[in-house]
Length: 228
Image 1: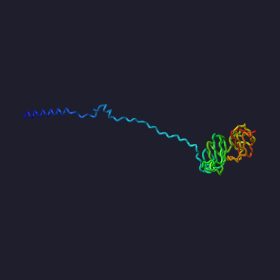
Image 2: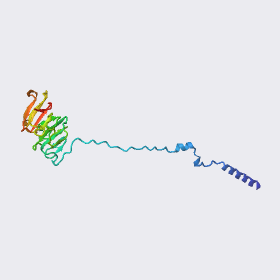
Image 3: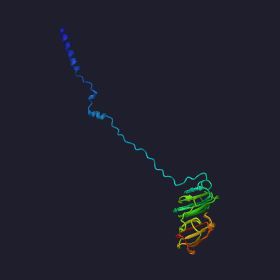
Image 4: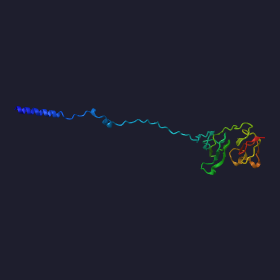
């Protein structure tokens, strides 16, 4: 009986010793630094986002025409007479190279729609009739109903269209002859051929007498006119 008790005690001690050899459960803190580096989520760099910039808007050169027909000053564009601009006499007071204007009987874009026109780079004057349908202007700058003088009194008269009695005093004028010099005495500023009282060029000499009854005087390609 004693032998069996001793044997049981030996077996129990052996089992306890074997259980002490079992591998311990690893602690979370026992993970190596290299393993932690492998499992760490990569850092996300913060990239600043530039605020979007809007494109610079360049204003259109087309004017916004008044819809009441009250505008007495306007720029380049195509206008409806009686709606956008009033009938009347206007002048481009300063030289504007490349200026072209046309009085229109319609807006079809046909050559036959042009009542009268002019290409000039000098100060000019135009009368828009109440019967005109439209008026077109390109590179002429500002048209204004201000018809006051653009030339100092008694000064030489350069190329351009001028108002007799306002810019030009009636009398006899002389200009140096030139191969392309052209002049015309005018009874009006509509640009029509029937408004030309008389005209001349190099073949007639560069001397002209402007009458007090003339409405306007136009010249191009001439040296400045001086009163004699």
